[in-house]
Image 1 (spheres, rainbow, N blue to C red):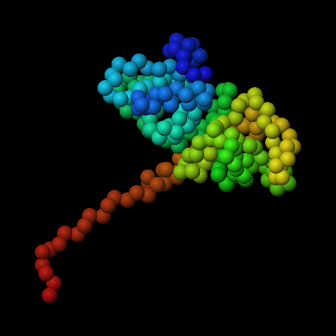
Image 2 (spheres, rainbow, N blue to C red):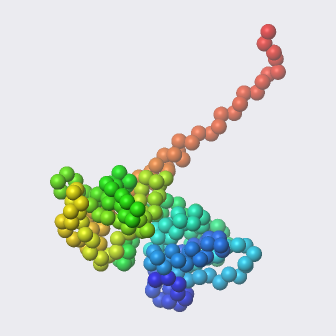
Image 3 (cartoon, helix red, strand yellow):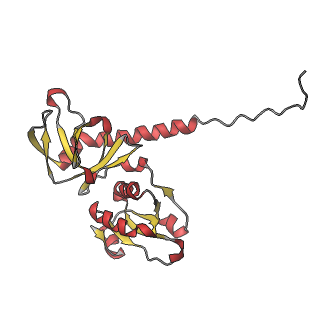
Length: 225
């Protein structure tokens, strides 16, 4: 993961996207790309006067690139075609960040904040979706792998496919172990899709609810006595 050349990026296969950001954030982007496991190729900077840089990455990493956008608070994700045409593409919004991509080493997941049971400076303990009561199970997530999205109502993080995760009961006692892929498919896959769907529907309703401004009535110029 991290920086590579375009040839190796193409050999891996899959659709590509372009992330455009301020040149001043290049160092941060490089560090976070390595941290989040994003394979990318830097686009040659042919116009240094515009103050921007671009990297090309696989579409599967869009949720993780969104985490980078959240951190540096700027940037745009666009298709390769849009980039070549010189168009601006679209802002990297939270709606893109809920998707998880099967077949990858990292599985991006979203967790509603109401599932947070405990937190400290290093980690957050979250209840695993679909478990409750005496059978409730909890997962500790490292804070450095967490990004808040949807105005702080949702956590964006990831599971490593082959990693074995320790699960805890309501008293924070270790009770079982589960592989990342099994944990994702059993508890987080449908949740991530549902969160994405819910916010998309909310966006459509908000757009539909906007009314045209009511024109002000023009004064007739007559004074009332």
